[in-house]
Length: 129
Image 1 (cartoon, rainbow, N blue to C red):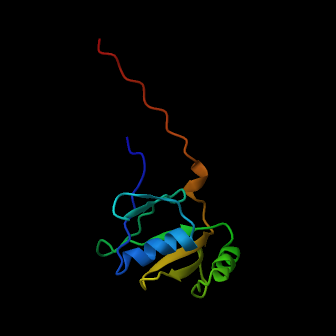
Image 2 (image 1 turned 120 degrees about the horizontal axis):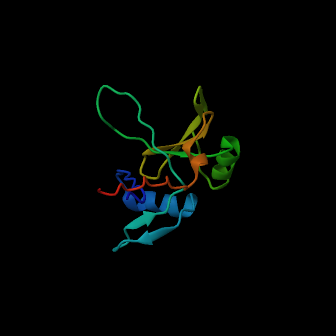
């Protein structure tokens, strides 16, 4: 049974970006050894977009109120990009300490998060006759 997902963010400065996730975004973590932090993330969903080639993959955090979240980040000294309005949501980008970026958006579409952690009932096993 699949019990979770592990997201990998490739970066030129892992220590700085780990500090950003810990100190700015406030994500809890465990030390997997030698300061290698693994972060607990908010509930997630996955989407598959058509493309001519596989990858690169992207990381977006979702929020209920983009303007409020951007204001909270600004109070921590973090500047977000201009908000782009798309049919599927309002999006900004946050620059990480390494120079990489992650997305932050307020969806305009239904999200899978509303499904909660409810597990599907398993099919009953058939008995051999």
